[in-house]
Length: 318
Ligand SMILES: Nc1nc2c(ncn2[C@@H]2O[C@H](COP(=O)(O)OP(=O)(O)OP(=O)(O)O)[C@@H](O)[C@H]2O)c(=O)[nH]1
Image (tube, rainbow, N blue to C red; front, top):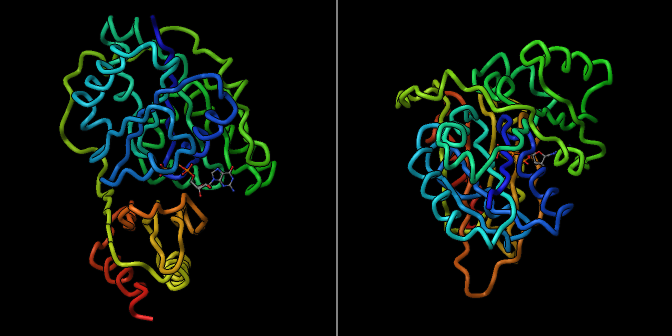
């Protein structure tokens, strides 16, 4: 039996995981299998999904367009043997993947095409940051160009006039897109899932082209740090905030699961552009090894600098 596929794309921090969580909340009767891919090694997004009873596959360590084929084929193969356990598949791509590459196995293989028909490719757009992202990176343009649905996110951060300008600009890149908007941090999940892409996707450029292993992300790098020692969360927040305000050029994204001293639950660290947010996450279990994982993604980043900054925030120093 065929299983509908939704591909989520959008630049780093645009809101893909947030949207995915709302889909799981608003569609409780659908059993989703989820493929999470991250640029950077730590499987942080998997931990940020609210309903762990969904089957979650992680394709970490690299980006989907470069390490895709083997991994995704294995996952689809596994899924095809347990079709009675799920109803639909969602693939969340990394924030710097070209979704044409992600989608190519779904269109170039007749069996995959039949068993896993792609119903929609949804691109999340951070309306405040998209202009800079389009100027700075090729991936943001490719994501827009390839999608069927644009979900305009973080709309409260810009004026209505600016939002119209953004739409106009996006339409000049892809005139076929259908717009949806988040409203007060609520996504129109039902309407999006009622929208099915028009015709078979044309991916002439990619279909028969051998996959190039040349890395396409220029100088975009990702570092993942893991620390068993607990952090002083106030110090961490202060230093990161100072960094973001004064020095953060080229840093696109920070995501982390933090183990802070005297705090019995995880802290979730999120930063996009210059914003920084630390909020409560799942409780640490008694038998669990507590470890912090933090990933930094950006252009021309200096790993040693971040390591020193983070080590300066350990609780033992205070
Ligand atoms: N103000 C506001 N913040 C939002 C909204 N949607 C998401 N965010 C915040 O934006 C940050 C990034 O959201 P994610 O859902 O993790 O973004 P993502 O696209 O999955 O990020 P990557 O996996 O790094 O590409 C988080 O701190 C969210 O809480 C929104 O509608 N409004």
